[in-house]
Image 1 (cartoon, helix red, strand yellow):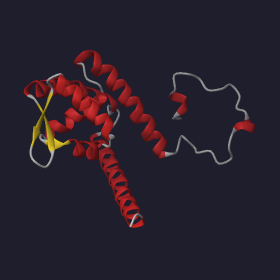
Image 2 (cartoon, one colour):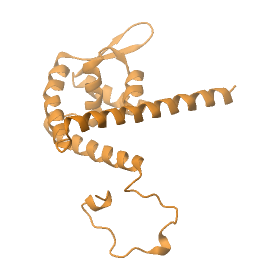
Image 3 (cartoon, rainbow, N blue to C red):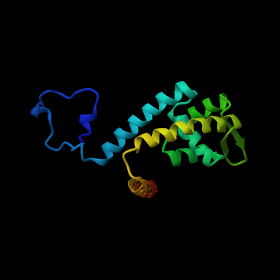
Image 4 (cartoon, one colour):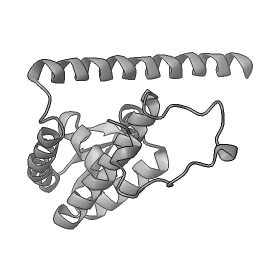
Length: 176
């Protein structure tokens, strides 16, 4: 199945060969494109489902999901684990704190965050919908295929992390 054939809007009737690159990526075989497109669609549909029903968007939900498993962590840890930028995390944390979903604790070295009781209750309501969405996404996969998919994604994630670490080492050496 073609990545582009699943789009809601049709492509051009005839392709203009003078505007196509001989080096264009095969978007039906290019894994980063699939992952990016899938993540974008999943994020926008999740936000559309969660915001009207629960009053939180996808960034809030990602932070809540992490804090439900790792309470009292720093915003920096949230950025590292989820891959969000500091500004997005800061905005979301501020909004959730104002809504009473999240609280901050201070120690002398760092500010840590955790879900409040209200936040945990909200998390537990949202997680039911989140798991139903996952079930729908993976309905055509066998249990073995699901395990294989998680293994592949985990390995890809490790590759990205390893590349980030290598890049940080190179940039720290060049700044000396």
